[in-house]
Image (cartoon, rainbow, N blue to C red; front, side, top):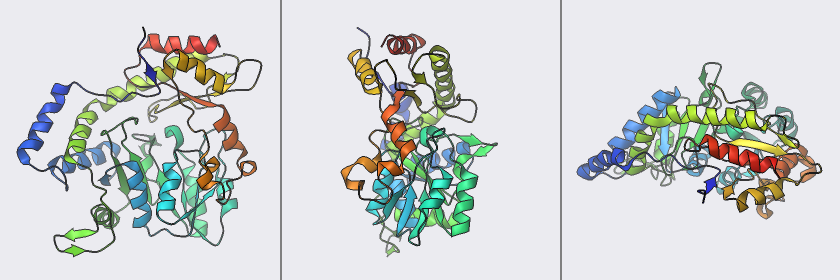
Length: 368
C-alpha cells in the first residue's frame, strides 16, 4: 500500500545530526531566554536572508501580534480575506478591526487599487500577505501607504528566502513577519521571526517578546511570552544546513507538476514557474467549472487514494462567522477572492516527495 501523501511533510534530518545540539543544550542548562542557540540562529538567519535586524519569536501568529504592538497600530487595518485565519486573528487580538479588500486574480495578493478604495479616516495600516510566497505589489502598496500616512506590515509566512530584484523581499514595509511552523519551507517545529528596519525597532520587539523586560528589574511595556526556545533554535540551525537542497528539490517538483499538467482540461496552474528567487512553498491549481467533476469532488477523490491535498484558502477568512460583519467582508465585495477560494486546490509539495508520487497524483487528476 502506498504511503499517505500530505500537502506538505516537514523535513526531518537524521536524528544523529540533531543529538549534538541537544547535548550542548543539556550541558549548558539554558533552555530559553535568548541562549546561545537562539543567538546563533538569529544571526545565521539574518545572514542567510540578507537582512540586518531579525528577532526570533515562538510562532508566526505571535510575530504578527507583537509586530502590531511594536508599531502601536490601532483603528482599522486593510488586509486580505485570502489567507490563513491567523492573519486576521492577530488584528483582533490587538483590538484592531480588519477591513477586507479583494485580491489580484493573477497573484492571489491584495490588489493595490482595492486597498486604496478601502481607506477610511480610521485606517492606520495595511497588512498584506505574500500568498504562496509570491511577492505582493510592494512598490504600489508602499506608494499608497506614503500618500495616506499608513504603516505596512507584511505577513511573510510563506516567503522564506524569496528575493526580488536581487534583494530580500523581507526588506519591504515597516516590518515583515515569518512563520517557521512545521508546514513551512524552513521550520523550527514551531517558530517565527520579525524583520525590522533598524536597531531601535528590533530592541522594542525584543522587549515585547519577553514580557516587556529590559533587565532583571525593569519592565517598559506590556509584553508577552513570545520567545523561541533553545531546542527550537537548535533545530533551526540544523535545518538551515539543508535549506538550499530543499529549495532546489521544491523547484524540481514544481517544474514536474507543470510539465505533467500542461494542457490538462479544466486544470490551470495560476502561478509562474518557481525559479531562483522563488521558494515553491505551495503548488496551487485552479479546478475550472465544466463537464468534469469540480474542485471538491477532486479533493475527495485524492483523499480516497491517500493523497491529502488542501483547499488553501477555503473558506475565506471573511466567510467565518466571527468576521462576516467586518468591513468589506461581503462576498460581492471580494469576487476574485471568492472565485479563488471556491476553485483552488494545493497539491503536495515537499522535498521527500518522489517523481513517481507526483506522477501518481497527476494521473488521478487526469482520470477524474
